[in-house]
Length: 455
Image (cartoon, rainbow, N blue to C red):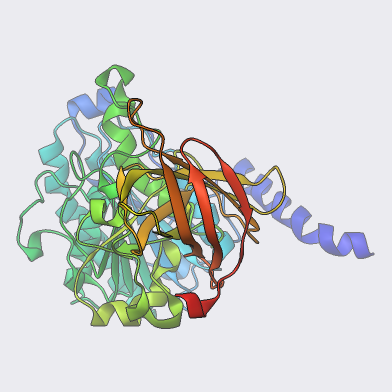
């Protein structure tokens, strides 16, 4: 009986999906090819509904009669997924992934806006022109939802590339009453430097969050929302091809990384702390790590959960927020601040390699400051150390000082104190005092809670 209690929901779901497939009730995203794109396609918008009852089997929704779809619960959150330009006509590869993760996160209505007929064309300008027609279609549908009792505050539009601006057009029609718009690398060509009414902007929803990953090519460069994230500076993404000889991936990898990064945050397990800063270089130099203005919550986390910082962000000025990633999932790094104070007689220029360990050989994460920095007597030098993974309960630190100059004489770095602060978790900083680092010689120390009186 105990086993059957847990197997029953699974078996019922399986039978439901099998039945749906057998009777042809699953509606799929329009699959076109390069021939369609070459000839061009006229706008046709199809709305595919996914819920926890049909998370892999889309249902084509009537634009005029919502009563035909009892599984569409108007009291739930409704999230619209709006894709962008499709020059080859193929369906986006990430559609099923984002849909399933959203439904795992919350019992909601996920509406996939399929405007592949209209987006599939080699004429980008025509696709841009079609965005207004798509927005009008979505607007009319949301109006039907509102007439049926749905709250605009419960509507979330997630727009990719051209889809980000479509979301903005929809939101503007409702005078910014839509609950949330998420723009994933909003399209730059034909939208850059346009007035607010011709692109996504902060007035289009109660909260607008935007991610930039390709500002030097296909994406929009300047801020568009209440908070704008710039992953890896918003340009070249780790793991993406660096030369044109890599084929199509060279052109689309940076742009599409925005969707992949956002999807990775939906479950609430993976996320990146992002810091407001005037430039990416200042961020990497550790000049923008103060999060006091955000109170106990700390600086915002990029992604699905940034809505938790809504009230604070709405009171602040528009700013750029930076974070870095790895080249594959899990993408998000763990950030530490390393403060070093020396008492050598003269200043020292060089690099410091930092390894953190929790006492096991399996947890040895390395970070090397990428710039030649100056260590000065009785002056704290701040190093922003980023590690590929999070490490809990740090117990040891290994340090290597180097100058990077073969002809330079051997130097020692006489360290008065080093302090390691975890920027991800509310943990007390760890310290080590009074030791010497020989050039190119690694030294390992156990870390202790800092003696605050010494700082």
